[in-house]
Image: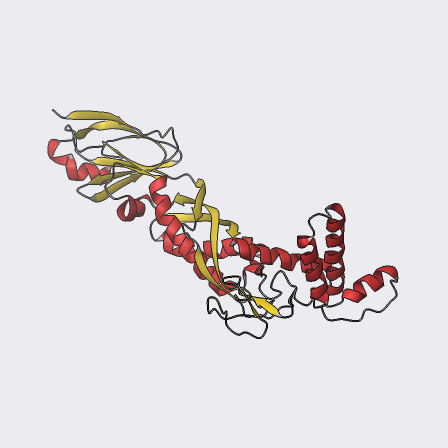
Length: 353
């Protein structure tokens, strides 16, 4: 037995529903003269046989001939306006859905002019609202009885991430430029996507880029670059590094390996070991660049194999124990840089020797 519907209304207490159909199944019949109540932030669309027949705005509507001429003419005329008619009504939310999240699910590859290739992640927020209920129902929601904002988020997130990658590649050359143009990138993404998304009856109201996360090693390089920029020139930066290392050695005389490496780094940056200490006693003294001092290896007659630690003659090219090629002290196997024999870290790539 069919159920006559006399009041059509939908209230979304959770605030997450974009579209809802009444009746939810095809078993209900809307009574002629029934009351349709549409909230201020809603629109109601009548559907019959897959066609959108009438669109109602906010307010109370009595379903009679004057209010629903198209639907009444098609369905109620044969019954002299006394019989109920079978149809569906979709309530579509017109309010703005804010603080929606977007972000890259996996690190994406970016060609950087300074770091070559960098894998980065990005995240941000956006907001949308429905501007054309019929277009939205026809292209996105379809015949679902309920359509929540969570389902639309997946669709929009993919479009924003894709546009973010295009915008990034065409507007910056290095990730070092990112902090200065977060707002501009968000605005560019918004302007690029407004028209394509409007084709679905949706308005993209706002897009913000909140953060771009770099790999740890790239972040360290960025921090180091910032420290050098803050120092102003290499002379002051070298003095700063050496002075901090000396303080560290004074505080912990039992562990001086790391502090000594810091001293070496500070002096190598400016190539001015003697100038650092001379100018500390005499500020007016001129600084003359000097080469980094080289400490001879512990034994001048033997060399240790890095692979098996066996001792070999200093003139040997290959290990007599394991046949591995013998590299001179200070040689970096990662970047092939020849460092001073006493160096603990490669001056080119930073690898521990």
